[in-house]
Image (cartoon, rainbow over all chains, first blue to last red; front, side, top):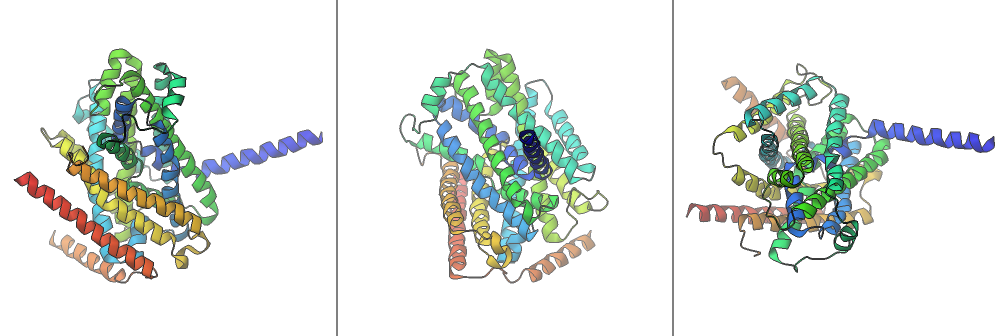
Length: 422
Length: 57
């Protein structure tokens, strides 16, 4: 009897913990899975097609990298109750504030264009014209935010996050060799030696894992959700779960293209989906659906990151818990960025490839600054108190930030001068 | 329309005043990090300008 009462007590305690997590879950999961946006899917698909399973070990390293960077935004948001843009303005003054805000606006808008490129190209595979995709996506996103509740928005976003897992059954359907995945993928190696092309791929994978909008989005999201200091451990767990899931999805994409398309030159994820359809119709379809979902999830988060940041600085009402009437400027900026980015994709002969490359270069100007500010703000004892970075957190965070700054800079430079590392 | 721009300009002025002074403790480490960031951004912008000139040629 004593055993059963103890078991019941433990089960009840565990269930309460799960319930508590489900209340707090959201910002970390959504931001990390949205990180696998249209550009990310293309990078992973191209990595698998080029190097097979050989770079899976490198993707695994990106779990702690993404986690350590993003968990800092959870602490900063929960303690200061301010978004990243406001924290930069307050901490470093107007010059660095405006620099970050304007840079964020440009990077977010350009990234939104790439999300629309991904979504339209994915649905074109099924015969849906681009204009219909753009109109449909904008209408869908309007319906998601218009109800005026953060909770509803977050749960719908999490549904789209679940759809991102579609690559996992896809990978099982192509019957990869498990022994080969373990042998080639889990032991660190540089296929074909460490050359310029491999370096470019490694940098591209890092570039898609940590993006500037993620820092701004998660911190604002933590504030809008109203997370308190006591919620920080769950917020960290949420981020860890999200960063693990995002890398797992990336690995399954690499497995799909590494199994079926090894040796095929892949320029875009939609091209990979079309190739896959020729060998396995369902896997190709999954790839196309996943690409659309990734673009949509990216668009949902990126458009909000800018609107939150502007709201914080201009003092507008800027919460998803407010109706359009209560926060008109917040929603106006949300729809303005969304509609203009969608329209760009519909312009005949628009320089879409140039825009895609330009995003990577502009992001390099914002990412190092945002990361350095993040570390400095986390060391501000006056505001952070006991949640200030410890020595070990500074060492790990500092090392990751320096590595990301160097690699993302080299990536941006290699996009501008493609022959530099050849 | 003119009123909207006027209000926007006033708002930006107010923001600049509100955040005229950095509120983070300006230790030696913070100062060094900010100077390094300025140098880094100058280097990047110079590279972009150079690339732009190359494209024009």
